[in-house]
Image (cartoon, rainbow, N blue to C red; front, side):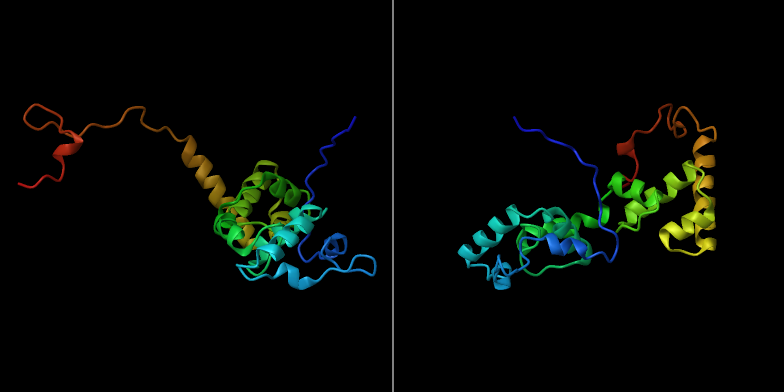
Length: 188
């Protein structure tokens, strides 16, 4: 019988390259690997298959892919994906919202964050009562900028809680009827 454990997500710290020592693609005396295998031409299907097979065995495959995406690396096979396969992921990266990264940052870890995740860190820090000084340190911004972001969050919350009209205001009646959407902008 096999057992499966769900280990917590562990994101690489910014600048941390220690994961590379565990990569299958690292050539050693007992495991010689030709680095050219990971940089095939588009029509070299045998090289691509070999590289993907090696990546399939790699314990740091996800970290390799994350690093390639975060660094904008578009060359070669990284994390088991070709340049073409990583293209859509590169495009989607700015809108990524991974709450495990947000939580890791709030806990004090220095991990890569997208713009969306940085905004989520600001909101989470505000909700948890994190000081402006701590937020500035977490996001590597000035204390003044952190105070500004907290002011914006407070203002947005205040405006959200203001009494909003429950019903939409109808436009004034014309000839005893309320105009419908199609009536606006029609040519005379």
